[in-house]
Image (cartoon, rainbow, N blue to C red):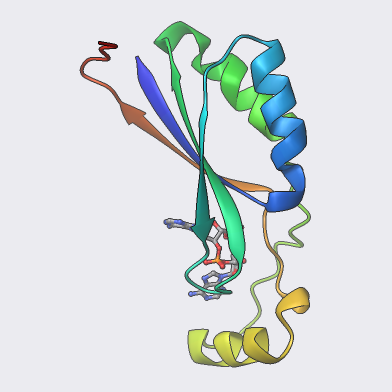
Length: 109
Ligand code: 2BA
């Protein structure tokens, strides 16, 4: 079993919830806040059998398209933070940040 922890932009949450439910995946949504922009996002906890991990990751990728340009530039983190504070809409945010963790055991009581 695997646990997917996916930090998702709020605009993609309805589509991702729908797709996961339609495909029979269970998920828990947590309200979360990005440490950099300090804006709301949503963290999904999705427990999946290891054999279905790729299916679940494919659903996340389809529902959360990244609009990142991939250009990091030469700005320091401090300069980026200052720019983000004055113009948060100007920061490139990906569709989802995904972590995959091993799960030793899942029990429902
Ligand atoms: P935030 O922390 O609010 O970050 C929003 C976007 O700001 C990031 O998009 C990234 O493009 C930029 N950013 C973040 N930290 C930065 C830094 N130190 N210097 C320059 N730019 C920075 P994403 O990378 O797509 O991340 C979207 C959200 O995913 C993040 O929101 C955070 O909530 C989560 N996240 C990203 N990386 C994470 C990590 N390593 N651990 C936990 N959560 C993470």
